[in-house]
Length: 411
Image (cartoon, rainbow, N blue to C red; front, side):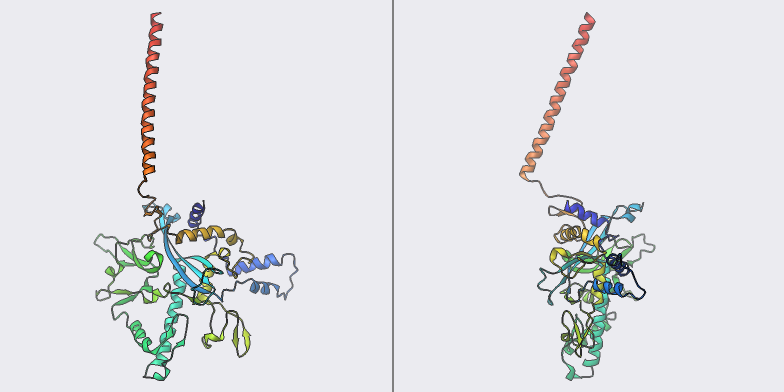
């Protein structure tokens, strides 16, 4: 029953009924519910106070990637397309957690687990990684060139990189000269795009986009057969189709893309770049003894708002459990949790096919057991025996009818 409910969730995921309300609508719902019956005044601060009171605070948590998973499911557009050979399309998901400890190593209680589409996840995390990379190279340029070894100290610039003059110069030069060295950054293919145009050779076009690999533990760029990147072709390698303007072969650099899933533990606390991180605790930000408002990292805020949430089950304290106007999420949280569990437990293979009894494919099962063979044989023999017995009865009844008819004629 839970699996059926999970499939029902999947079929409606494009509408995302469990995604949070927009900030404008959710805040309106808060005010409407809590001040019902109150008499507003022209200068009322009540609405604004309630809006701030019911915003979830996830600034003390750390974002950790869990799994990437493709799922083949019914798609309305495919069903309406008369030229499509199937009504199934590939849905792409990422599961991530918000963990309570800084190292993300202990994420067994008081954490939230979330499901978001791969496009949304990559859009936010890649932008964050690109900004972090740019900051690192700017800091490296300012402190490590011109033989200024007096500044060869590690200092925290962001959540991804510790700037080290012994390594950052070489790393940033490789980034700058990537194309000249025959590489294309994998993040150039976050949106589906054609990599092979058949022109006049009567071949099919080939496209590239993100895929889940290594049982969902990694994200890489793969080959697709359609312009929307709904149908992956794992038999092809994307690098076989990449060339520069001079016709030379190009390779893909996954270095930046790897930061979105490998050992991710990103603080959701927005740190002032002019302050050292150790000047902040998990709840408050201080500047010269003055307490300032805590801000949530934009990356965490974006994907948290878009994600389907499984929070109460894991004891997550700071979510939407008491947030008015969010009843839809709470009412369906068990369905969301069950669906996430099905994705994590190996229900689907890398291409999104359902796995039944250890075999991937469209409900193809494994070999029969001895008991199943006996039952099948007994059923077949029993069916044959009943058929023979029915034939015998039919023969006797037919003969009896003939005798009765003959007797009547003789009389």
